[in-house]
Length: 206
Image (cartoon, rainbow, N blue to C red):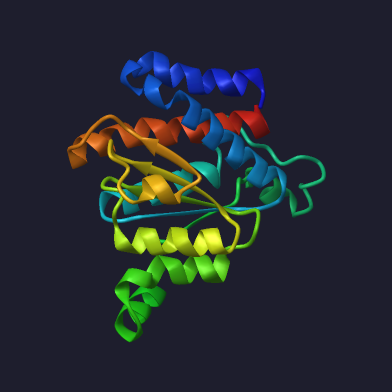
């Protein structure tokens, strides 16, 4: 990891001193994400309710320019001129919350609490990373997704509230914020995942 990338992470702790307790987990999560993309793999992201919106937000920051320009490299610029000039470098990420047809069919035909697990089974490959958000750490559909990810040798990162819930013992990296009320947990999740997105963008495009 570049020093400038690490500095992006440390800046978060300067702005949110209450998050200093998660410094090591933040750095470890960033390293795992960097290793994932360096190996040509992808990030899968999911959550429920407000955390589902966060999952979409994360993918939006990763798949296009966030804070830095991401001009295509000469090796990537293989398209017509207009397309080359418009496309941006991407860090491959898939949200598991927006496949409405698949999710409703699966919930109706099989089980609603396996809708994320089914997608991890279908999309996930060794070397990929599953990034989940759950304020309680106990959401059944998130738990099952993590269990499938572990069986398929994906690294897992969880963003939770203070207790961490069941995810504390299940995930490779648990980033648990020091809050217990749902909306306060979510208020801290946003600067954390924004910072991770800024950091990995810096690593690859800075």
